Image (cartoon, rainbow, N blue to C red; front, side, top):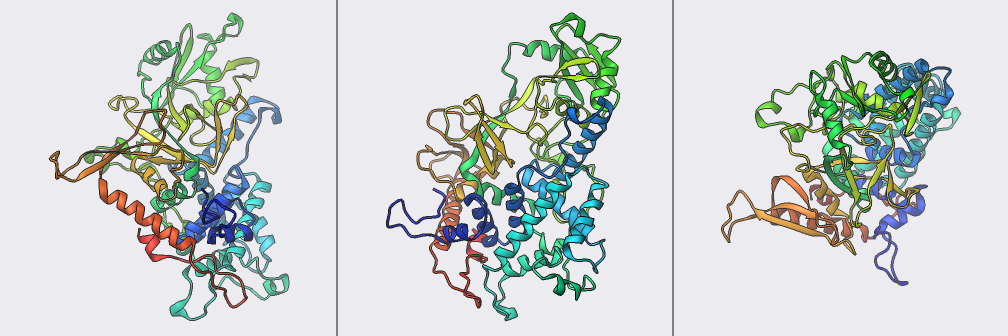
Length: 545
């Protein structure tokens, strides 16, 4: 299923991907990520994404209430961490891409360090500089950079080292450029002392030039065996109506508002939020004062000043999307790498309400000074479940972009009419045994889920494609449109697309991509001048498909 063997038998041959997995200190899915990245012309991005998934959570600080003397110190540190995560996520809603954009920011700081120092000293100084503006964990950042350097050097040595400019391997050129951006950690200390300037070091945008859509396709194809699908829905609870009533009680209705938050009331009358303390308590949790607070019997609703104006691409009409202006400063891809998503791919809560969700740290109850609070709730949620299972919901880390009930939808968009998917670099069974915890998750919106078909193994999955009348009409001879995919036989809820995709053409393209990957998997392996097998190369046919 992972394509490391040609068949399921004792006489099977090891594929190119299987050989690559023997040489790289990574799991098979991460080796597949690097292999696909090389074939599709984005090897440097693939190495960083694989290193990010291998290193675990993104190297941001992860503050705990137990480590601070009072709530004010904890709230300040949590706010710094949340600001960094939101900044580098950039509306992509992908943990690996967040780490990629953080790494590019680290590379910019690296260019400010003294070229007369060795690479390790420059790495340490660059991490210090990044830590001055972003709440990162220095030790985890150092481990992340070390993973990237190790994998980049190993992968570069598995490429054709032909010196002729006309026949030079573009994959090796990109990976060598990445090693140069890291200031040549492959050289000895004596060799590094001879390098007194950064002449010959490429710009970040020369190496990290892949568009966001290619990275979504790469992640979807690499982790297609860990696919979760779902959509927006109301929270399945008996308390839904009181939630909506509490939101509606605000002067500026909190229904479907990015700026509203709900705190459940404690059953104990002595610990309930009252009119005289609710404002101050919520301000202490969020780190800023709410605009209005409404105290009810079951819930306390608060709304914050509107400081953000954003909307996901799927919610923009043709007339409004052209006038939409993202709230990001001018971004230079040549010096900074991958830009933020414009507009963001999902409609999420504003910063202050989202911080309230994060403040609980996954606990059902938490203390703010001498006040015990129940973690905030939302009437809306993104319902993800594992593709191919009867019903196995997906759980995400509290501080990640998909990890808490922070996503809202427009009142004009009926709940359940919009469909999402995500892929994860790792899945583990939750303690309850009835859910899976997803790590390294990346959001796929609408038709992007088709990218997973390029590597998806349909064995036992019950994959079904839904076709309907397309722009050509509903006549018998008209071209049909691909309008839905169902991933399981038991759960009959299909994944519906928003736009029209040419039915047979999409299927033919997916099959062409699968065939190109199959031919690359079983191709004859050559060796380079050092006797190393050539396992990474760029394939124009696979990239085009």
